Image (cartoon, rainbow, N blue to C red):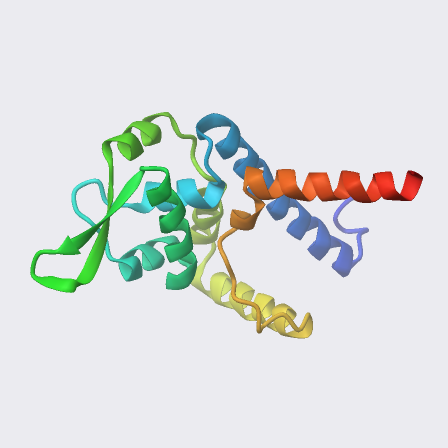
Length: 178
């Protein structure tokens, strides 16, 4: 069935499915290649190799909320890929910087799917981007999920979370058949 014969809802769902597949496959590739979630790799790739960035600067570069970036930065710091540094001129301000291990990991890392998505959005005309943003916001309101904080793509889908979820599914399946 060609695109002309599909209903509008089906075209919308198919488009969303393709985008989600791109993001999911990118997340899987990131975990398999460098052992990081796509969100973690995306944040790592957005850091400035020359100078530490504040959480707000990093949030702006990743187009996400500061609280979401903070969670990801904590995970990267736990793995020794970034460090938090106090600003020399203001002890209240911290910057996030790549470590040698973070730089080495980036040399072997694939392009993240979020970067592909952003490039695709940038290829749209400004009026198309505004229209898309408006319509997606309207859809989110209709779904009544505006109260949920938009975290980074699949960050909660790290391999540990996925393994725990898979164990729960297996346990439920066993309880149903046992």
